[in-house]
Image (cartoon, rainbow, N blue to C red; front, side, top):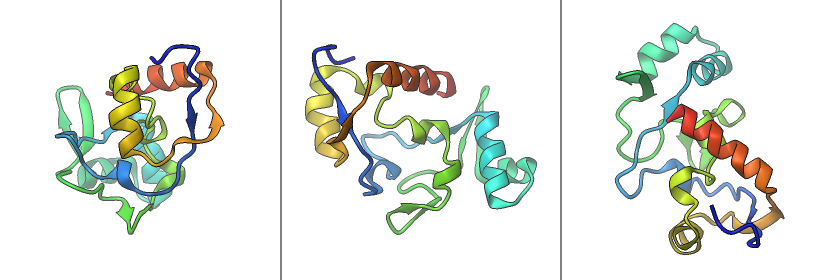
Length: 136
């Protein structure tokens, strides 16, 4: 994680860039809670959501066939934003992004929300890191 002296500002700008596969990454993982929340949002049973939208690999479920934009990205907006998965809720505070050099170069260049908005408290960042690590 970047040094505690560094103040991290972040506010989603709604660009939809984080919803598009990049750098060989493309899985959107779902916990059971995520699957239930999105299914409810879509007005379908969790079993139907899981069957229609998910693939299971080992103990993990992820969005089917994600080779590009997320299935739920409509234009530049998430069509399930209120119910979005934990992985999406915790962006950009993922363990692999928290190296100071990577944050300053790759993440800041990729995500227009980095450096904007309020300073995110370290406690909130740590909470996001723990939530995301559990899902993935």
